[in-house]
Image (tube, rainbow, N blue to C red; front, top):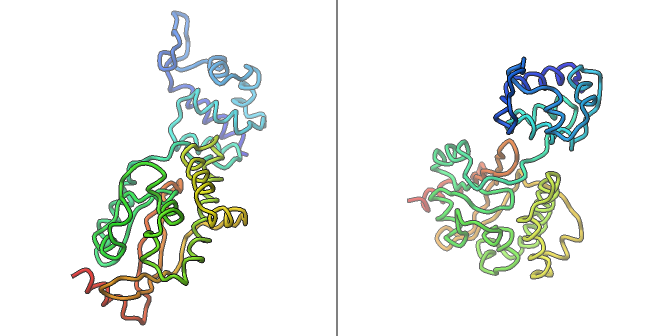
Length: 276
């Protein structure tokens, strides 16, 4: 914890807020342009003495709940909130409501990946965008850009047999284990921010509808998918094995998946045929 820098940061954020911004009356005797210390304490539901000690850098160790309250009281942006947590010696919590808007940086990369299948997904594996080669290789089975947990590739893997037709049958068990381990990690991360109805609903539905998912869920394996090798079955080019790379946004709420040919194989030529 950097108590001195934390104190200075709180002071700087307090100075920039006008009373009207948070529903307070400025009054004729106000000598500071921003908020008073006691006003920040009131807005954060903290004692005045406690907040004064924070701004004096006296080594008071704020809890996660207090930091969230201060972030709300001081109208901090996402980056400022994360910085506040880091100064206090805490890991920054994830955003509670993941955005449905496709991340612009990932989308810019996707638009430049012409020679390899690529797709953008949420952390629950809901497709948001994909290039033409991904659609050619994987077909149109996976809806892109639709809301709701039922569009998740993981959800469909365990509830719709057609979702597995692009993969050799002998690989299904490994993929199922990997999907469940990834979703368990995502659900725990979302829960840190106070719970997540979408992830909870998806898991509850899968536990109710799929005995296979329920069995794997009880194993409590956890592993975020970052790299893998997968075999895909396509009627025009046969079975191809590809490297699966995952690039995550900073908060982990979205990922760009791209499928690269393995060196020393003819997969690149076969993908080129498919693209043509």
